[in-house]
Each structure stands twice: as structure tokens, then as C-alpha cells.
Length: 313
Image 1 (cartoon, rainbow, N blue to C red):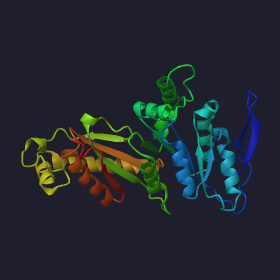
Image 2: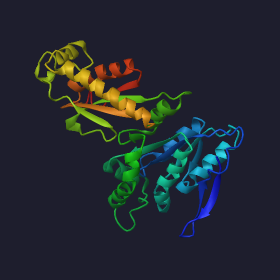
Image 3: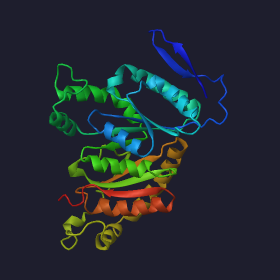
Image 4: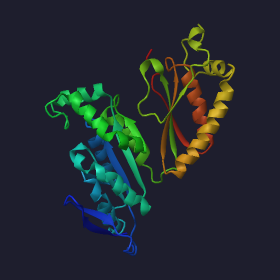
């Protein structure tokens, strides 16, 4: 793999991969991670975490130079095997070139992932106010104006991301733990799943890829002897799965997820978050999440279970 430079109509010089040039003997194409997301959502923390894990990290690299960075890594004789590139709104003039750069990489079968860091408007405003800094896009307006402009700018990239992490309720150490869990391993699994129970009264998880509703099942909250327990208890689990439709739902949704997982693998997607909801996130969704995670794990998908709202009542 090699690159050539060409001049665009606006005068900018960009680097493109040159298919006419043979790959250098012994060249190893490095693995690539694109880190992006909302300003204030933790991009710097994510970059430092990957750097600590041995990744070569480049901050604020113009997207059209990403293929050149990958080529230089390929020439390093294995010394730069993993590259992480931070792309943010400081380089907003280059965002139009990101899709083209990623298309160039795909043509050469470069293993790449896009990690998008998300946070609620309230969390972002609080973080900017705490450090007394303006949002990069607010101009003469308010912080919320800058956040809205950035969300609009990044909407397509978020939709194409392989991994979306909502940092609204995470501190620095919890975010690092999430990234460690996904990038610290020597070998990446084909697909990793997070099954997350939640309560609708606390809002939908913004980082969920798939959302399923368990409120069609009777609520153990209204059974006095079950109310104090959670869905992790045998008593509540037995009650939930003895209800009409519960076992059938688990069977059919597992089959659907297996079909989706196969498609994700074909498309190179390595992470999926399945959110299972009920009213309060304590009984039905917890019991269903536990069973669903076990089914996925038995099917060869590395799975973790997170009970977002259990204990909040």
C-alpha cells in the first residue's frame, strides 16, 4: 500500500492511496481506530487510555491524511501496529473528506473502527461551565447553541460508528474501564454484546443499538412478596418466565439477535448494545436481560450484562 498526493480544486493537497504501487515487502497494515464525538464527552480521556494500552495516538489529524498515517504505520516494520486518530470539530473543514478517506482504507482492507463518545446536553453544559470554557462552535451564542451545531455536524458520523459510548453518567475512571474492556485484549472477539436493562421512567439509553420493551409482561412490582427483590433473584425470574409469552419472546428474540449478529459480523461491526426495558428497570427487564445474555454467550457472542437503573428506586 502506498499513497500519492494530488491537488483538489480548492487548492488543498490531499493524500490518496495509489493502487498502482505494490505493497512494500514485509509491510504490515496497522489496525486503525477513529475517535470522535461531542466536545466535552471524553475524547481526550479515550485517547490517553488507548495510548496507555500501546496505541500510537494522533490528535486532531485532518481526515484526508489518515491514509498517509496508515501507510507510514505500514512502513514501520510492525513498530506501529495500532493507530488511534482523534477527529473533532476543530478540524470541521475536513469532515467532508472523512468519508472519502475511510472509503480509501476499505478498498485496501484496513481494519478500522469508529468510536463515538456521546453525552447529554445537560452533562455537556455542566462540564463546559465547570472549566469556564466556551464550546468550540458556540461563537457569539450560548453553549447549548454550540452543542446543537456540533450534534448536527456529527449526526452522520454517529450513525456510522461501530461503538457509541454515552459518558453522561461516567467519571474518568469508568470511561477508561469501558475502553480497557474493549481494547486491552490481545485478540479481539468477532462480536461483543452488552445487554443493558433499563427503566423507561428514567429515559432511553442513548448508546443502545437495539431496544426491546418488556412491559407487555405483568409487573412483579404489584406482587407484594416480590416487590423487594430484583430480576436477578430466582423468585422474580421464575415469576416473569412463567407468564404467557415470556419464554416464547426470549426464544424468538434470541433467534432474531443471532440473525442480526451474523449480519454485524459480515459488515465488520464488533460491538452491539441491546437495551431491554421495563417501567422501573428492576424486575422484568433485569430478568430478561440475564436470560438473554446467557443465550448470546452460549451462542458464541462475548457478552456482558449491565443493569443501568437497578437500585435507583
